[in-house]
Structure formats: C-alpha cells, structure tokens
Length: 88
Image (tube, rainbow, N blue to C red; front, top):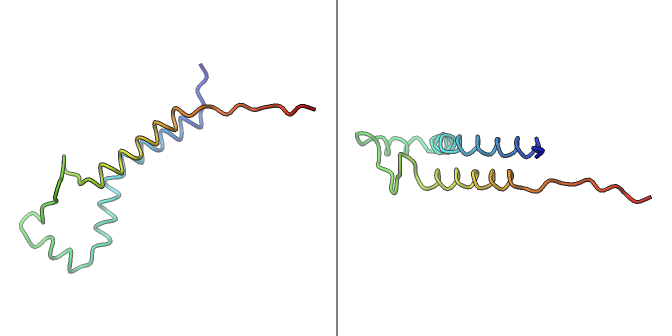
C-alpha cells in the first residue's frame, strides 16, 4: 500500500493545529480583553471562574480542537487522485 505524502502532511498539520488550538484561543482572548475587563476578571483571588470548564478548558477550546481532529481524519482518509491520460 502506497502512502500519499500530501495527505499525511495535511493530516499531521491539522493534528498539530488541534493541539495548539486551546493555547492560541486563550492567548487571543487575553489579547482582545480590554484593560478594564482584565482588571475586573483578575480582581478576585484566582480570577473569575469559567462556566462549564472541563479539564481546564472551555467549550470553545474543545469544539475547536475536535473540529481540527475531525478535519484531520477526513484528510487522512481522503481518496487519492488518479491521473487520467488524455486519449489522443
């Protein structure tokens, strides 16, 4: 069985994106927070609690990571393109 290199690279890149998604989302969210909102969130000891947090991540983190993993599964299982010779 021949492995298509482009499918493997694409699926691997999507898995890496899924792993990086929670950190990237938190970094962008922190960067977009205004100074007043940031001060209000961190005014309590330990910061404000997140709602519906599972293993330290919010639903947006989990849904984004799962979307990348599903896309990786589709990319890995995509059929290969066959080259068809033009009839002369």
